[in-house]
Image (tube, rainbow, N blue to C red; front, side, top):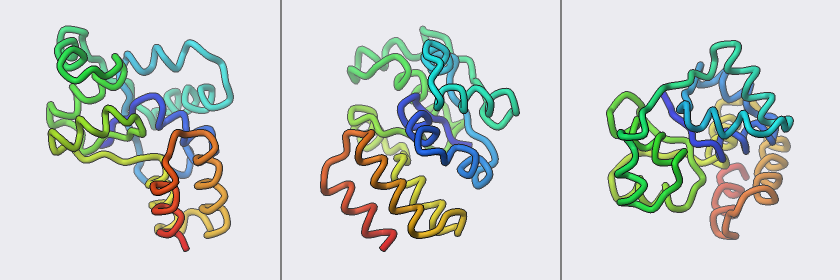
Length: 161
C-alpha cells in the first residue's frame, strides 16, 4: 500500500485523476495529521479526497506525534511529511506519494521509494487508463500547479511522448 503526503494527493485530485489513480492502485493511506490538513479547506480537490475517504478507498492511518517528532527535528520537514515518513519506515507502506523537495531528499537518503504526481500520470498512461493527449494535458497542468523544475517536467513529458 502507498501512503501520501497532502501536496501530492491534492495535486492528483486537482488534475481530476484521483478516482482513476485509486482504480489502478485500489487504495492508499494518509495519516491523521494529513487528514486534518485536508479538512482545513473546502476546495474541489479536498472535497474529492474526502469523498474517497468516505468510500473507503483512502484510509486514514493514525500516528502519534511522539512517533514522528524526532523526524521533524532530524530532517527539518513539515509535520504531515514527517508523519507519512514515520509510517513508511515502519515497513507497512511500500512507497510515499510526495512532491515535497525535502521529503524526496530524505527518501533518497533513507532508501524509501517515492512517487510524484507526474509519475502517477505516466503510470496511468502506461496502464492505458488515460490517453496520450490527456496525459500530456495533466503533466502540463501539474507544471502550472507544482514547483517542478523544467528538467523534471521535460523528463516526465518525454516518458509520455
